[in-house]
Length: 287
Image (cartoon, rainbow, N blue to C red; front, side, top):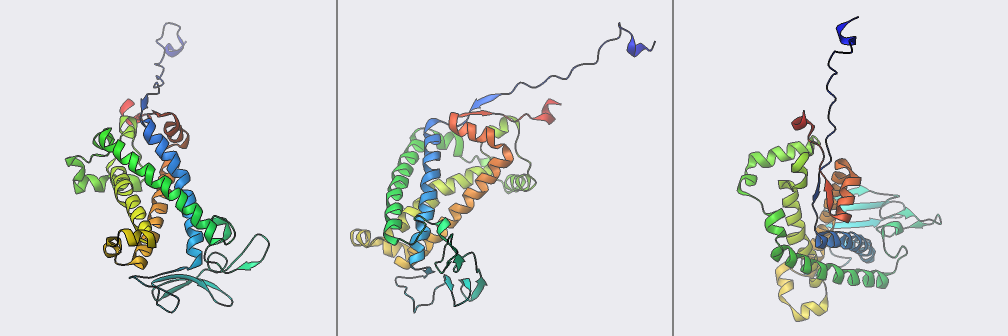
């Protein structure tokens, strides 16, 4: 009988299954603000597209009307829809500018009904939805910024350390993300440099910019705070910046959702509900 078959031969070691490690990753104010913002930004985007449908052209400066040259426009001709950036025109028939509704009728609004609130053209209702949730966004952002400042969230989670400002460190993080090499083990519970910069940019730059440019488009606010028009170079410039910032937020949200899916949606979503995050095993370290 071979030695390996002998009852006295030592059994091969059984690999140990690593015990999942859970950490408290998201505090309650972060979780509440995250989910309120998820609803708020979706409603504001869709109602904003309805408002944009009323005049789907963007200008720079104080004034802008149909006879003026717009730097961006979504429109239609007798047989096609299009987007125009400056002098560059892109045909968009069936998507933007000219599309078919659920009843099979051809429409020539800039954005289709499935992308707007309300689904049919109603500028007054779109404004009411937009302005109500603008208050939700403004109050929520103010409270969250105060909590981040005095509750230690900035210092603990968002503060960029000196070593992280190194171009080599940033480039290394960019390459890891491009290759889908997501952090494992304890590193997965910490924000990396790209996350820190993007969250800081959204919380302290992009969202305040959205609110400020939104206020600048209000004639009532312009009467009370005329310096807003000087700050943004006119009401039409503020409208253009507002539109650009909105789509930068959309880009951030799409990347954010993609990273959640790649990192493990069940674990990521559960942590944003309960606060508890299960660390992905670092197999190279455990080997």
